Image (tube, helix red, strand yellow):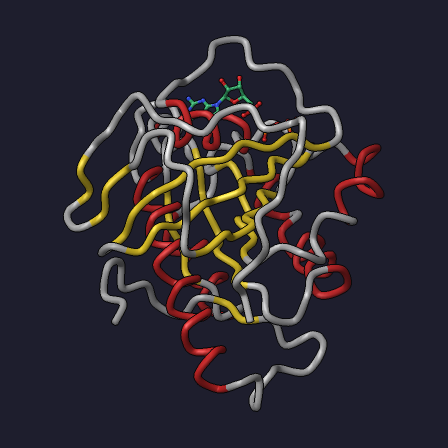
Length: 232
Ligand SMILES: Nc1nc2c(ncn2[C@@H]2O[C@H](COP(=O)(O)OP(=O)(O)OP(=O)(O)O)[C@@H](O)[C@H]2O)c(=O)[nH]1
């Protein structure tokens, strides 16, 4: 069952959103105390691909200039309401630098979802994806939902990884593929809200299944499709 208990930590940086933007049936809630579900989402991927900027854009509506490299892990919280279901998203931003790998790996296990991020203007960050998938296989729990994200689409003229190639890679790994720009805010809300929808659906399904069909180790759940706000 994906429903988790309320957690407290001194590292909570934010539980509000200045945007208050409608997202069809999805709505951002400000400073809400109560929630129906708490999901842990962990961002992983090479250093410099824009993980921190994606988190800051979604949680604060900001694209921070001169963003320094993440040291270890950081997290932010944002609560959203989707079709009357209140969802608290605990978003963990991990350092992409190799030297923090042993720290960040320990955060995979309890993740409900992983956002595997690369930079569309950096071939190297795409070439490292199989290595990240091996990490997921080894350290994540077997119920985790994984989505591949190609960030920095505002830098179209510098693109090194063609969309079709990335889509084919994602499809071969049974992952959904989404391209974003943290800078221009393209698809950032969609990424997190759609993910929340999938996690609610999975949680409801798990409750119904009563864990009868729990996948075997190494058979993590990837998102084959997203149907935002299509939950029952
Ligand atoms: N043009 C553009 N630049 C971006 C975008 N997202 C992030 N950046 C830039 O890319 C650089 C790295 O961004 P971060 O968010 O710190 O990258 P990260 O993946 O968190 O890096 P680590 O913390 O080292 O793992 C910064 O200079 C950002 O300003 C984007 O969507 N478009």
